[in-house]
Each structure stands twice: as C-alpha cells, then as structure tokens.
Image (cartoon, rainbow, N blue to C red; front, side, top):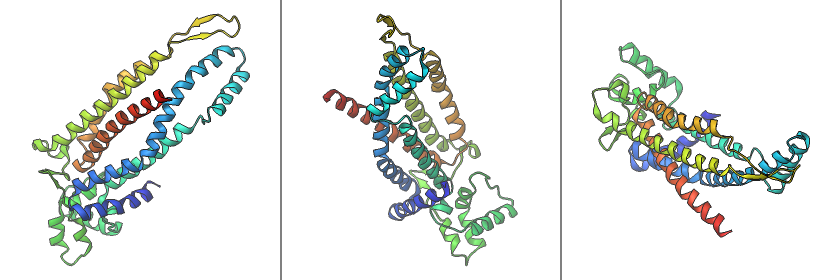
Length: 297
C-alpha cells in the first residue's frame, strides 16, 4: 500500500523536479502541496479534537451520574455521540489517513530513483552490485542515495545505459549536499545544519502540543452534580499520569529526533524539517481560526 502511494506521489515530485531542476527546492514545493491537500483533513481533525474536549465535560457528568449502572452509562454516552453527530472513531480515521500518506511520502523521499525516476528494480540492483564489487560502501537503508552520489562512476561503468542518466539528480541545495549522511561525514560541519534545524522544530512542535494538552487538562478540573444526592462534587484532575508522560515525551522526542536525523540523508531530513515547520504554522493558524469561530458562535 505504501509503495502504491509512494509511486503516485513520485509523479508529482518528478514534475516539480523537472520545473526547478533541484531536489531540495522540489522537496519544499512537494511538501507544501501535500500539506495543502491534507488541509481539509487537518481542519476536520482540529475541529474534532476541540469538539471532543467539550464533550468530555458532558461525559464526565454521565459517568459520575451512572457510575453504578455501566449499561445505562454506555447507552447515555452513545446517545451523546449521536446527538452531537460525532463518531467515537472519527478522529482516529483522520489520523490513520494522515499517517498512511506521511509514511508513503517517507518511502518516496527515501527511494527517489524507484518512485521519482521510475528506474526498474533490476537496474537498481545491478548498480548496487557494481558498487559493492568495486568495494564502495552502499547503505542497506538508503542504497539509492548512494547511487545518486556515485552517478559519475556509474556513468563511466555503463556508458550506453539509458537508465543510468536518471541517477543524475541535482542534490546540491544552497551549498548543502542532500545525498550526504551526517553519520558518514562527521568532519563536515555543513551536514549538521538541517538536522539541527529539524531537531529544534521537533522540540518546538512537541512543546506546543504539550502546552495545549496541559491547558485542556486544567479545564477538566470541574464541579459536577452527583446524580444521587444532587450535591455539587469537586472532581479532581485524573490526568496527572498523562501530564507526566507528556513532560517526559517533550524531552525524549528531541533525543529520538537526534538519532534519526544523524543517520538519514539530508534530503530526507529536509523533508522532515519543512513538514515540521508547516505543521507548526498550520497548528497555530487553525487553532486561532477555530477559536475565533467558536467565539463568534
């Protein structure tokens, strides 16, 4: 499934590359277009999250009121979803679709020769074998990036091969070689620029998410009505464990980002960086727009 969508997206990336003739700029335009295409899903997901947060207040009352009658509680909760015209799985479906597309794009950016240039697998394997026989190192995870880097050598080795010309992908982006992997070029300071920016953007994104969740958790410290006594009962926040987990994630995710960014080609890290930046901007804009819409209502 991922391969199918990666191949489909490959036509778009190939088209953009044909216009700008630079892999880095093609990646930026590609990421921007995909983000725009996913915008309706993002808006729906954001609205669903906001609506779900509001529904939590009503669900708390139902859960408290029917705490001794689980069957009645479940029935009332289902009625609540029905009245609010929401599905318990609506947010999950949107998230699954987005994850499917993002993983497909990961396949595409990781293997541009297969999905963007449409070079047959047999030809790619032949080039990989030639490099290995020459004693050149070929990555098991990103072999196609190594093929692009060794284009000149492969061209001399296969002068009459039409497919080898498709390995000539322009990877120079603002003075950075997007085919390089930081782990393999430790002494080259330029390979750290994109990964560091990616790590910073990941940290900002996670901190924003954590801050939003903390605000929502604070709102859940509410007073509800005891259905049996009719008295007001102060309900304490039950999300302390989740908040602690989020706090830990705010530190763990940047650390994971470091390990990923330094073993991936810069072209892939560039995609992650641009996607993070656009996601941050999207979240800020949508959150403000939906908040304003709620105030007007």
